[in-house]
Image (cartoon, rainbow, N blue to C red):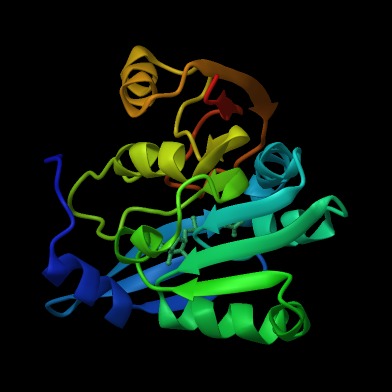
Length: 223
Ligand SMILES: C[S@@+](CC[C@H](N)C(=O)[O-])C[C@H]1O[C@@H](n2cnc3c(N)ncnc32)[C@H](O)[C@@H]1O
């Protein structure tokens, strides 16, 4: 599969796709000519993994940034943390934004949740450096036909946005350890203290994007 970059065309197409959401999964349905292409974005089996990522991102309390709302599983765990003050969520898709506003109208009203609508690539530059005590990054590839390493471009921004004492974590896409490829991208962004935990999970057979029984939960600090 070719490796690609997000163009305006890919972003526009993603925003026009229709998500189908139920308790089990979130899928995006793309039109390709007369064919319908189904892209699994998120499934409920990720719950223990999302709980782990949310606990890492919330572990310092304070102000937490989350990129990608999806089914809101990790957002629910972050919200349960009594230690956090604010929870900023960046989400681009209008349907997810609608769900988020409905689910958290009270928290948005009180200022505990700060919603930033749009692609993080167009939004984070409005946020001052060292704003967050924790960051959880879980976006997804915007297109099924091309391979995207959606987390790599964010590493530099994570470093800029994180306080010196903060913790960054992301959907790692790795089953057992942080590979040299990820390590080198993290070091390049400036991170020096890179650890992880291995989370046990049980994806069902119909899950197309994860076939392993484990997945890495990164615990990344500046120093
Ligand atoms: C895998 S889901 C997130 C799942 C979430 N952690 C949960 O627990 O349900 C990915 C989400 O990221 C959003 N997204 C993808 N690319 C994005 C980008 N560049 N900026 C902001 N949101 C993005 C998608 O619309 C989708 O809602």
